Image (cartoon, rainbow, N blue to C red; front, side):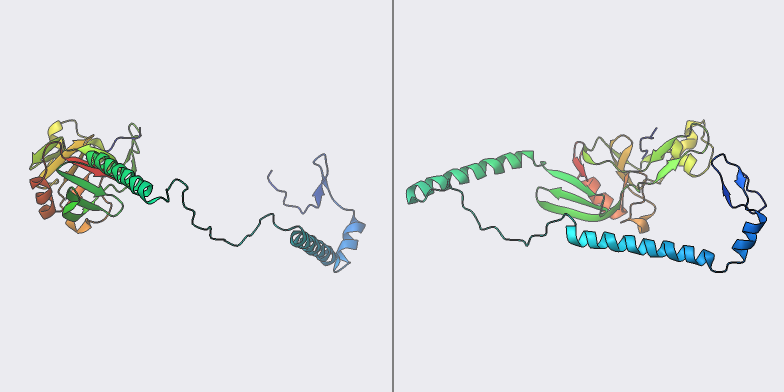
Length: 264
């Protein structure tokens, strides 16, 4: 149930511009009168700058049209189907060639079968929140489940720890099968509820939260029941795989110690 912790103040007076030495330069009284008495001077400067900007943009546009963008656009041309020159045209040689290919196919199929899981196994699709109970290519059960939410919990005080609530991915196997499992609440469960972490181990025990059965597959992760079946089909767990009561009973009845679990 527990994922691994990851472990110059401006002057109030108006100023014109600063010189290279940082001193503020103020215009003489005559200059101020000249600027104030010449309406439109500021507008002419603004107009000249705007005209220059438009001219530069036009030059760049013309240059791009003339020089091009550097990309080459070629129409797609479908390539003709080519046949390997190794295929014989003689009837007898073609028959022998076909026999070799079929032998190779049987060999590859045998190797693939050897890699396939034996007996009943469990497949969990985290993206779709689905659990499958399979025997070979046969699907014995398809049901909704809830995988890890991917949420991050950070401890505000204490050790400043961090937990990421992801479900693991890969191949696992059932290590322990528990009836009426009791959840020993980890530290993050108390941090999440803003409760003090107990020092008495008995205060960590939570009965009934995990449902009727739990299949433990390592590192604190389990397939177990839930009190919140209405949330099944959503990624809302803390890393374990939650399954509804009736579907969990079928998974339990068909599983054994060593049953393979594939999570992707």
